Length: 470
Image (cartoon, rainbow, N blue to C red):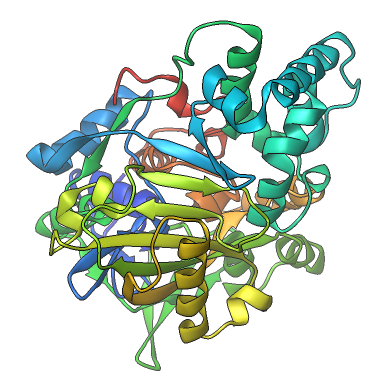
């Protein structure tokens, strides 16, 4: 049912924009409030001196035909097909991804390769009866030696905690059927190349953010109102319904009445901004949720072609960088001058730690040193760079997150007109298609349908398993 008051959407990322588009297409009034100066959330494209770079790697692939059609309708011919090439840097060598037996044998030697295979067989014969953690999940399926070789160091780098403190839920969502370990297992014990790993994917010509920018334009053409640099700072309710929200723009607060509210802000922020605030135990659950933050140092290199990969996973503990994107190999249009190359040096960190606290200049210098250390650039080739920081980029699946989320979810169920969606809105490691679908379903709930938006991405699969839609 369409109300005379607007639907307020807090957050102009994939989930919020999908919800807004569905609503305006059905005649609803919509106000979207975004705290950044551009749309897309973590799936946005930044621009520096004409060089375009994403925050992380964002491919467009999905098992859901409706989502695929939705994206295609927005992008049209601006969707390009990109061949996938990625490698792993480990022990000062580059491993193919997916891994081939010849490449493993050359890099690790026949003895170590055999030990990995033997460790895998032992794990299959005598698995651990307990499978609560990421470490146990991986070890049971691929062997302890492979876990220690390909997972332990990288996991620590990405999450800041060992695999023994990460819940198995994360592994079940993100690894099944396509991980490095799965590819290596097939290489070592026989079988064909891993078919589940996609060989190509769709991508907007001007970066991931181009799709969300186009979607925002479509929302505004349909009558929706988009407000940038306008965060929702308070959400007022009467115990059962949200009545209005407060927005702060340029230091000035204003009030926006709402028929419904859809939010993709982190659950921690949402609970703290409710007025009146939730009970102490609910606030404690919200504060118990942990996030991993993210920094991209975009380097410009005076070289036409740096390396052939779209991205490289850096498992080595000798450098701080965790992953490197080569944006020119995602789309040539990301680089304004083809004589040069731009790279995204990605650092996983936590606000207040050593990496996060480094100055932009120190981060640029660190990234420039590390790209040379890795052998991916020569001294003097880095000629410029910029830094973008993204707080709360990844929800952490630690030992207490599930109980905290359940407490929050149960308490929020009292509200008739408040829905929380998206990666941070459900504290779930969603992909773009999960977030898109959540937005569409949240909008349809307002329009009279009944969908459980919390149930999206609860299956123990990862959508890259199906390559038919790429």
